[in-house]
Length: 199
Ligand SMILES: Cc1cc2nc3c(=O)[nH]c(=O)nc-3n(C[C@H](O)[C@H](O)[C@H](O)COP(=O)(O)O)c2cc1C
Image 1: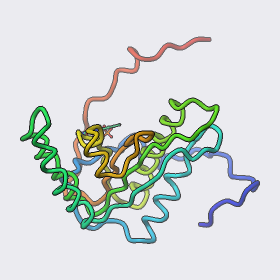
Image 2: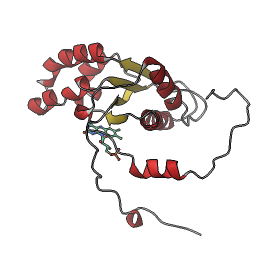
Image 3: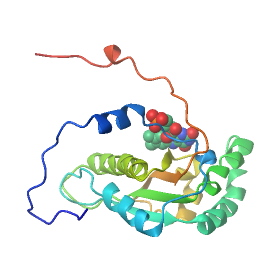
């Protein structure tokens, strides 16, 4: 499969039972349960390319990625340890650091709004869309994924360690790998309480 060239006519959507089934049965993984194998370097490039193919008002590309292998995440988890002690529940803050070290691959998605007439909110929503598409792309290569923020996405000193500037925000840590066991379905919303139909 080659990527589309600028101005090229793209295929219109066609019905796909396979895609419907995949969307109807997709589930996030518990990050701690993600193990090897993870994506190869070539697969990582494709997953990033597909993730970056997300709606973005104004073609601003208001996000950036940090692709984190096991070494950088082990170092990060260690550096975060003293900061966990400052959190309201230090035990829990320490425990969730295992989510950083277990998976084979993590893509940190940073919302990086640019100066533009387009609202920052819309730029941040675009970063969320990127996170979701990264998960779909990882699934398309046969991997499971988990979208996590946790306390270190909000703690100012942790953000400094992550290299996230004061203009930026963590959209998510997208952990990617393989589950040994099938995930279980979780509660889903009752659409009748959320949807109104208007003629
Ligand atoms: C923006 C965002 C941040 C999240 N942060 C966390 C988190 O810090 N810890 C956590 O356990 N789950 C977090 N989650 C939820 C997990 O991704 C959760 O496993 C997922 O929503 C389960 O639903 P799914 O199986 O339909 O994907 C977050 C989800 C989103 C969208």
